[in-house]
Length: 112
Length: 110
Image (cartoon, rainbow over all chains, first blue to last red; front, side, top):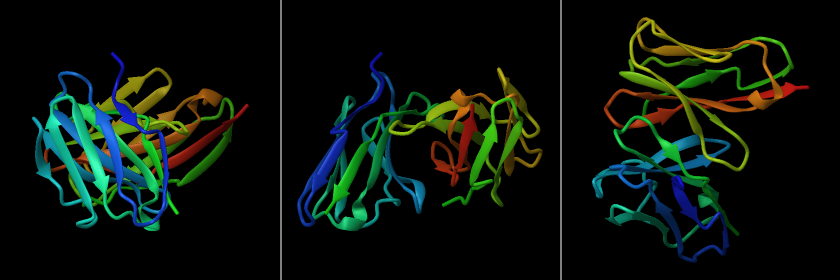
């Protein structure tokens, strides 16, 4: 089992550019979560999916953020346009029962 | 959002010492989890507790869920350098949504 796979590991982009983060959950896991981690705010839940359907996106900061899960093996988190305050580590996690989370290694995003 | 406060925020101890970190909230949780995160990696699940007063042991780590299911503690006996990391608690009160605490950064000095 390769675990939860996120790409890219690091992303540096200029303010105003579009950024797309990718996640491949563990096969068979029905739940997928996107989190953001910063020193100031810790780990924040952005959105989660169950069986590819978005269940709660109340944590998405604003309309610049969007997430999709077109199938059980792939999800994206998109930021358009990006801003310096979006700089953070973004984690994807998956779960088979909504309880035991397995996290990916994260994408470190820097917006300059 | 359920507020989970962890204390202390930072902890630096010598190898062999014991320590306890705390996770407190005003909310009642149906379950609570503890994770350890190492630099450059995602958090790794250590344990899940679901019953008030429950105690779970994982080698030198002892986890306790408060009777009222609002708080939890993690006790490490004879800490080792490999225990170094960020310890996070996460509580679930609404079903399938875990909110994370602020974290305790532990450094064990050889």
